[in-house]
Image (cartoon, rainbow, N blue to C red; front, side, top):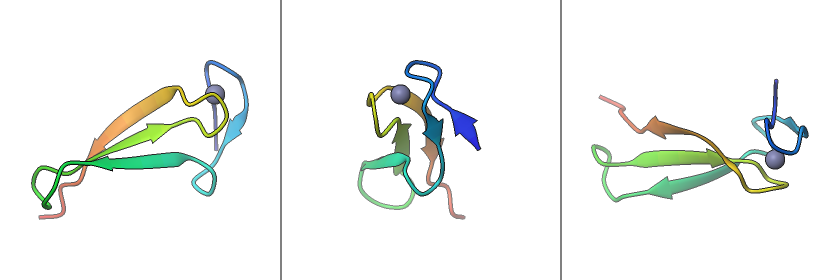
Length: 49
Ligand SMILES: [Zn+2]
């Protein structure tokens, strides 16, 4: 799927770390980070409208 640009390890939806910040559906933000080096890979908004 993807490679971590920092440690070059393979990242999949199964091993990627997801940290959910914020409460409620509208303010929720998901932070994806590498499970090995914990570098932040991206953000995504929990916009389920
Ligand atoms: Zn990494």
